[in-house]
Amino acid sequence: MSSGQLKINWAKSHMPILKTIEDSFLSEKPFSGLKVGITLHLEAKTAYLAQVFKSGGAEVAICGSNPLSTQDDVRQSLKDEGIYVYGHWGVNPEEFKNSLNRVLDHQPHLIIDDGGDLTFLLHRERESLLVNVLGSCEETTTGIRRIKALENNRELRIPVIAVNDALCKHLFDNRYGTGQSSWDGILRTTNINIAGKKVVVVGYGWVGKGIALRGKGLGAKVIVTEIDCVKALEAYMDGFEVLSMSEAARIGDIFITATGNINVIDRNHFEVMKDNAILCNAGHFDVEINMVSLKEISKERKEVRKNITQYILKNGQRINVLGEGRLVNLACADGHPIEIMDLSFAIQSLSALYLLRNSSNLEKILHPVPEEIDNKVASLALKTMNIQIDTLSEEQIEYLKKA
Image (cartoon, rainbow, N blue to C red):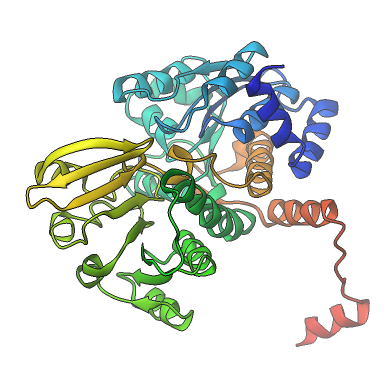
């Protein structure tokens, strides 16, 4: 058995929620005659999601959503099973865009998107294909923002389900998934001790909260930077030091960006950092650390360890960037824990089914995940863990109606 198939089998054995959904898809074949186009981080957990759609009768075409997140052995295993797979690890920008276009060449009826790349390409350059698209399911905060911009400009021409905003997604995937997997990438790549280090978490959304929490658990002295006064207050009350980025840049040992915005670590920050500072990004796109400016003010750069590029500034100061400033949990590790993606991909698969059954009645806007899907996934999760919860009595139901 190939290494890719071994990885997929291991993931599958820890994804009982998705296995339950696959069993129902196998018996009902809801996607028969349909094509599903997917762009996600192409590793073992994603491979199983692709298999689930194939089990439901779909023709599946998939490509990676990040140049450094595709695992080539997993990619080959999917191809061996008759799934159309495009791209490979380390694609350049032209190859990456070509992979997206190859997926769209299949004229998919349903889109499973990550960062809005397929949805945007459809609307900007492949408009003729939109007529057959029933809708899209978006995985990320960044993608939601991009699609919301399309909607605000009255350019969105298909219904989109905001999978990222489902409670079972952002509460767990963004906080516990990215929180743990970002540190997994940092630890694997650097092999350094975290206890006692000053760790600067840039942004205190759900991702930043998870990273800060796990950093605290590792013994780090966590500093949070924010632009939102409420989130900054929350970070302070959660026990973290809150500073401006200008202040934090001077004292941090490790910097982790989690904002979804551009240049949150910029030239003026590089210039005052400690020698040998470590920088990495947990946001979807590689724009949060201003790599262009860093290269401009450096006299030399070299790979000092796998996935660590060291930039030597003109004053001799060293700055180390992990995974080229791309998603550290995937560029430097295997992404979210399997059980976390079991929740997220269960939401994805059921949202795609919802689009299939309801697309003709849905406005061409961004839609929340229906509450019944969130509740179903949470219920299945508890069932797989043998956890039972209470239910209201008729007396309690009547009381709440009067309250």
